[in-house]
Length: 107
Image 1 (spheres, helix red, strand yellow):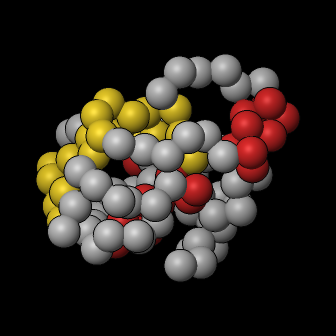
Image 2 (cartoon, helix red, strand yellow; image 1 turned 90 degrees about the vertical axis):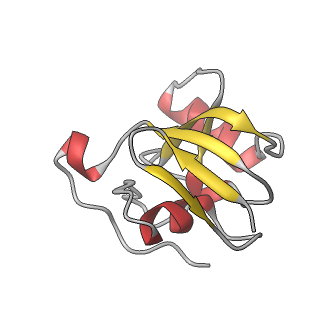
């Protein structure tokens, strides 16, 4: 099973193919996802530090363009499937923002 390392949180195993946002949330990381995993709010952003990720999706490109975000190594965790080991740093968390997450994203 792939291992996810979250800076400041630790490392845990996740079943292959799971959405990164759900893997983070299910393992105690307070990742935000205000729109419920629909790639509109961009609050579930993570910085990619290590690992093999697919290319940025068109829906992510549109969300970043709509919000004026141009950052290297940033992905929406609601659009990333875990297919291998990775190291990430959440950009916004429940703890750092003081906000509550939205509805749980679909599998």
